[in-house]
Image 1 (cartoon, one colour):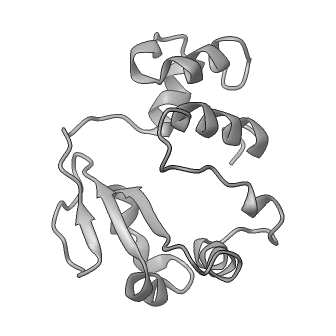
Image 2: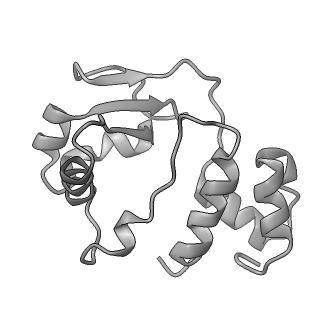
Length: 143
């Protein structure tokens, strides 16, 4: 947790990254929910506030491997669609009806990798959307 930027900086980077994708929306809903923040609580809140929408989770297969340890994992797996990005070294099998492994190239990149690379002074510009790179380059978030 100490290696993460504050929630407002992270939200800004998400908004910059999805700016050109009209079907995606960033949300600050977790800013108002009790801490610690649990995915199931966020989804229940979103469903209550926006019942006309369906919500899904997007995650790497590394997170899917540990989903059984999440709060109310059984409800998450029963009630929500998962879109899973393949990660090297993790299962790429669809073990659940509502899990779709997206067809994407296997890349050894993660948010932790990006944060560590910035900290180590490596060039990560090619790995980020240009606006996110500009935001990070003009800050000292992970340096």
